[in-house]
Image 1 (tube, rainbow, N blue to C red):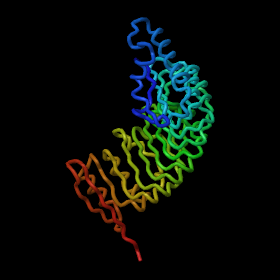
Image 2 (image 1 turned 60 degrees about the horizontal axis):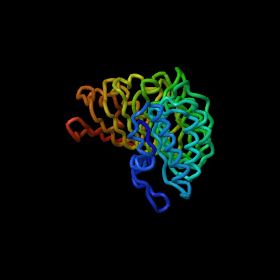
Image 3 (image 1 turned 180 degrees about the horizontal axis):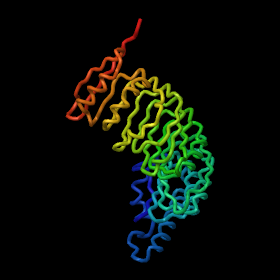
Image 4 (image 1 turned 180 degrees about the vertical axis):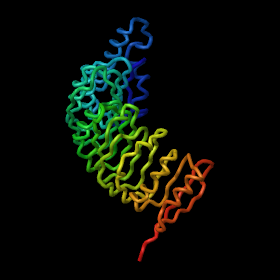
Length: 328
């Protein structure tokens, strides 16, 4: 089947459990996988199965733990919205929606408005241009979004007042459009920018952020307030992307350890500036790209207040331990 409705394996349903969803489908859909007719018949059979599962089989169940819907070909937002509403009536806590070429997406967004879920994963690529959206997710603490337009992500984030964990992966934008991540409660952020974000911009204001993982392509411009609580940052950038590093660099006052996947020549040139912008940085891991000559130039460029101790952790990984002399 190209479409699946499943709960996590043995996810609890008020003391009971639902087995793998494919097994449920085989039992309740009158042999749906044995139908050999046209694709339209598959879709109708699948729709009937999901309707029966949510509105008949689970009708008397007080609550369910999670709802996961993956649709590769079925993409009618009207019908999907009905399924989401049915799952919400079952007091679901976590929701995972992955819809390809979504049509009539406003119906889906409206079905989520004001719901009480605490975790949401959205993978939505749209058949048409991304629509104007409205959201209200007052209890959401964990959010992952993929393949959504920056403007839709911005609207979504504005409506998550208690969000703590955020993943934004391969979203896209028009030239000059800004992704705004301004969330006072945010503690962990993973941001992966695809090639469609090369001309986009990023604003980050998250005073409680402790963990930051940035991968892919750098935005053309970065606006960030002091990340006073940041403890761990990971950069997993595409090759040559350090040439587009935003200037000036933001201040990372509480950053103590940093790992860089690939260090290239331009990265060595930026490194002294990074040390000044991260006054408490003590350990810098270079996973690949260490160059003896570039390291010597970098070390010679530092003033006498810095002391660098170099050690090799593996064949390609090097550790720079950074000490700063404090003047009396």
